[in-house]
Length: 234
Ligand code: SF4
Image (cartoon, rainbow, N blue to C red; front, side):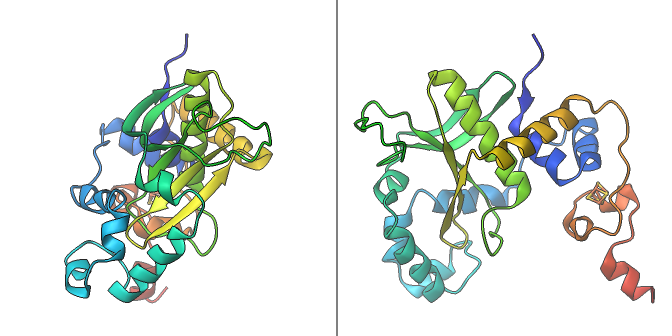
C-alpha cells in the first residue's frame, strides 16, 4: 500500500513543486506561531460579531473592526452559520485512500443539496480548512482548493459516504467560501497528488511568478523577485 500523502503537501505541490521539495528536504512542516491566533478566531464568530472596536483591534484581524463586523454579519446570513459556530469536531485527523490531513472543523451541513431527504443526523459532516490568510476576490486560492478537496475525499473514504463539498474559512477577515468537488477541482487534486508522489528530483523554478514574492524559500531558491528586480533597475 502506498504511503498517504499529507494534504498540506498537496497544497505546496499546487503552489510550486520546488517549494514542496524544499519543505520535505528540511522537514519544514510546522505553521508559524502566529497562525494559531488567527485560527482561534474561527471558533469565536458569535462573540466577535458583538465585540467592540478595541476588542477587535487587539485580535489578529486584517480589516478594520467595522468591516470585520460587517463581514461576520454577512456570514451569519449563510444557512450553515449554526453549523460553523457549533462544529461537531475540531482538529480532526482524517486519513483517506491517498491522503491524510487535519480538518480544523467538521460541520454538519443543514442540507447537502442532493435532494435525497436525509435528516441531519444521517448526513455526513463536511470538513473545513481554516486559513490564516486572506481570500482572493472570488473562490479560494488553488493550494487551498486542492487541500479542501483532499480533506473531503479523506472524510468520504473514512465514513464510506459521499462528501460533495468542503469549506475554507478566512477568519482574519470573517469570510467563508465553499469548495465543491467539481470535475475541475478533482482534476486539480489529482494533478497535485501526482506531483507530490513523484517528487524524486529538484523541480524547476517558476518563471517570473508573483508566487515567489511571498515564498519563504525564495533566497535559497535563488529567484529574483519582482521587487528585487525593480530595485536593481531590471
Ligand atoms: S521562490 Fe518561487 S520557484 Fe522558488 S520555491 Fe518559492 S515559489 Fe517556487
